[in-house]
Length: 333
Length: 259
Image (cartoon, rainbow over all chains, first blue to last red; front, side, top):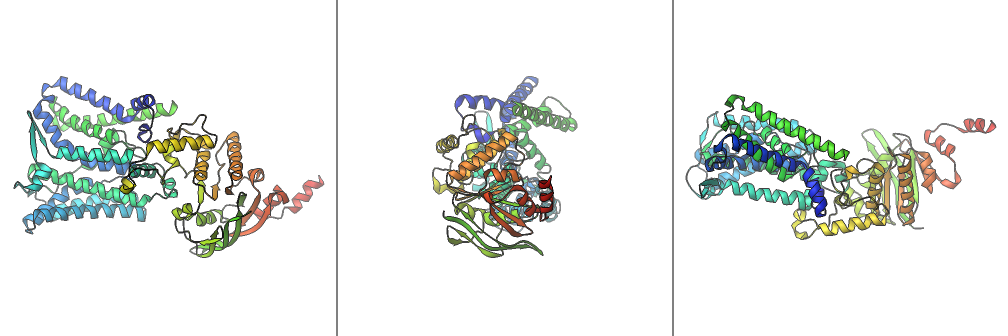
């Protein structure tokens, strides 16, 4: 859907936009925000919004990579584990190895590239489904994080400096307090929108997910594109992990547990097809905002902490049912 | 007529299976050649070898008299050989325009490589012009998703894409499978138009009736070998059928005629 709309005349574009999955997600997001705001005045307070915006980029950045990967027809369950491992490795190098923080970050980056490349190469060259490959990788990576730390969280880098400012600096706008990670999220989102909708590469990514054989028959290097997308997703997961570790000044080997499913939920709630071919970055941004708002708002309106996953699950399910119905309608019309 | 494609002693084995034993044939400019054979006769192996899906073990391929080596689908496309499979030619979630130029997208700022922005104006204009030229524009919008098209429309789009890149040889793999009667006729008519426009067509099909409607020549394969080569005018349906199955149908033929 996204593939076509930017090329349509205005009138047609409007009607197709109304029926598009990211539009329905947006409507629901607005409704949810309104409900939470009415139920609890604190929901829209500067403090609460600042809070949500601090968490949003960390999962949102991973979701951008996951959207591209899902559009190409693959997915990655190891992102949560990479989110945990990357900062742990960086901090161990700095604290126990006496390595310079810049060099340690570079090592962390290379580690993420390696994990993504291994995922991608096994999926494309040996032909095992990405579900199984990245599930195994999740265990390996999480196990590695636990083993090298002996299960204890590490104190993170808390000395102010270039890298901390770059990844976890904060600034105030009026009574709002934002982190630089928000800029990362916005910048990477714009880049991802450009790539998927307007660049040649985006055409390839959608085509590979839609009909891999057709893409290959046209000379599109499908395997190479997929491997690079696995690498990208892994690197973004590591980046998000670093941002988080710097922000809270701690690197925990269990950080990011369960993030893989939360990220995939953000992506599909936004309207990206789990089966590939149809991806929307705008939808993913809406999805990320929505899951963040739900997690935050549900606690604010007084749902007991232990019950709140029930609601999160139900709202996601409702979203997916809505998308499926819209899809059916579009096919009939 | 000039020879566009010549295969000389092509051989290909998969393990101990000799899928292609000694295939030789030539395709002339502006002719439709039908490649027939039962399942497992080696038709798809031959097609895949020509279109660069896998390399051949032995033998030579000539395009317009020049010896070539085809190592990838890209190589085949660059030599003007386009292959169209029933289900694998188009991406249903992409628009017609995007499909027509898949892998050969018109871009601005070419130096950006794969990150170069698509030239949407050019994409749409070229797609509309193409749809008009092949006569399927009346109800097709270049921005429509391929998933909204019928099987016959998809087939026509895939074929016109091959024509557009001035393909010398267009290989059609079962183009009429799963199509309705009317759509089948549309595609067959389209094949004739393609030939009249000077392209050579290699047609793979199970349906012998279709062959007699559009083909100039028939090549029959059996167990990895080409066992017969005849012009359509010199043969008939029953003869071809008997060559394909390898059964002696002449007895049956006499019996039928006696009645």
